[in-house]
Image 1 (cartoon, one colour):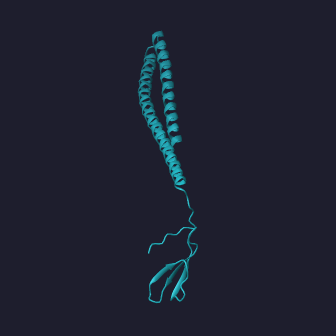
Image 2 (tube, rainbow, N blue to C red):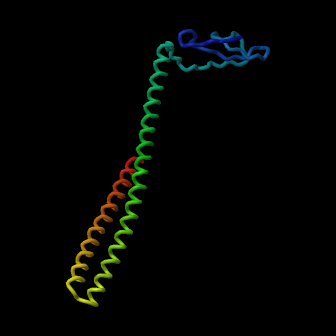
Length: 156
């Protein structure tokens, strides 16, 4: 026996055990059952197929929107990761240049201490300026790295 129930067709369902011990489901109580129980059914909200299809389309659109947002975020993170790698490379180059300029300037200062001539004074001053310029480039590279790292952290 197959039983189809909707809120408009059956408001009450009874589960009974008849005198022979069989379980019986019915929309009417039995006259003399051994045991009987009224089953409360949840209300079934009827929907038209067009409503269901519309809801499915809406869910599909929402899924696609979320997927697009995630793809966009993934692409942004990949670009930022490349920027971070470039910033690290620039920082390493700037560090090497800063170290070389500092060594060259210190050698010029030592030479000036040994032989105080106009040439050595000018050379030491020139190398000091160069060292300050290279140090500023290093600081700028550090700031660029911090900026892209911050940008990456804001996306996570």
